[in-house]
Image 1 (cartoon, rainbow, N blue to C red):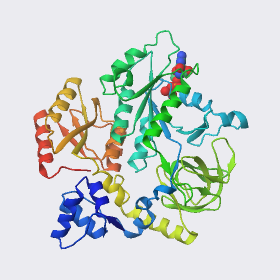
Image 2 (cartoon, protein in one colour; image 1 turned 90 degrees about the vertical axis):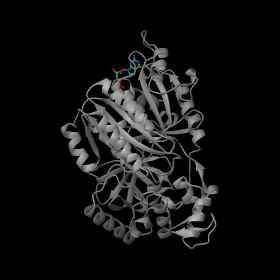
Image 3 (cartoon, helix red, strand yellow; image 1 turned 180 degrees about the horizontal axis):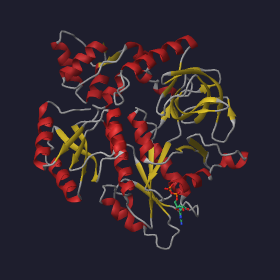
Image 4 (cartoon, rainbow, N blue to C red; image 1 turned 60 degrees about the vertical axis):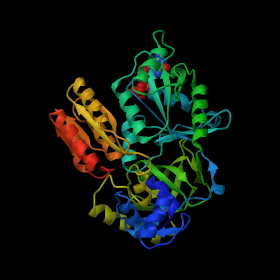
Length: 476
Ligand code: GDP
């Protein structure tokens, strides 16, 4: 596994010249465009004070994150969209309404098949993929497994209700993931709808929509009356264009499991969102710790398909066992190779149950990409006054080198949603006069999330300040 000095510098957010200098001091004469091996890269990373984790060679072999497709092979792909928002604000209704705009479905009269995601084709022949499980829990759980499949989040807010607790959670989970958001102000058919108020209230959560001179797109819709849907689709496509979403279609497929189960008649089935390449009938693959051979593929319209390209969701039959949501599917040369890799992965999964560990060399550096070092954490306290005081005190600790980033804060017990976000972001949870509920406690164990409990604000800030001053603070 080799990497160019420049590429490593980019991932570490350091100057290429500084790395060249450090390498010179280590007795190596290289330029930024030359490659260095993994051992040297690790030394450098440590030298610069970043923490790393060694991964096994055979695992790196199959992890194809470093195998970048050449620019000229890339083709536009459909954006993958997740809908979030408070309960009853209309997430499911909006998903149904958007599905109804599919021109292909209208023609073929296909039967809706729930396979975890669906794709629509618009009047202008554009394609969009929507994940069928709305909400931020599923989104962040996938992220905790290293699967960032969502390109764009639609935040649904009911115009007759307002910003509710799960709206705030959705905003914070989306921001923590760094995924762009579009606000859909729903239920605008209702007489009591007040979209203006929603836009104003969003300001308090640092979501500044275009009409308030911000850069978050917003659109008034009614999932019930079907109004504003074309506008919403246009805005998604505009955002997608800015993101320049591309993938290489003509290569061995890779994908992410969005859901999987054991079907009585058909055996283990997995819904897979293809991330690059084209999955074909007969392909041999590894998925998580399982292996298999594509026996059949079924799309979201219930039709058998022979192949599936980037951003398409398909249900895959022919697995050896049931994988987990978030597992990566990778097509390999032959069945022997598939067995080798899946056996190796099973052993590894057995011997080390570390959920929040980056899966590969590449993922490990993605945490180092930003310019200033960030100290992410979550804050839960017993009363609103304490939450505010703690967040303010923590923000005061930030300086030019290191910045506290409160991913989410709120009143009440520490919940599963908090733990999921903490695990996905490798952030500790600060509890002030509060403790986790029973379910959250189990998850904390499993995901190895770090907890910090306090009863005095001063102790809290003192300890965090100490950690920040430490070296560079815990990056993960
Ligand atoms: P979810 O919990 O966010 O998935 O919300 P649902 O889609 O289940 O919708 C909750 C309720 O709001 C249902 O009774 C819907 O019929 C209603 N609803 C959803 N969208 C609209 C809308 O645009 N206008 C009106 N009037 N009602 C809506």
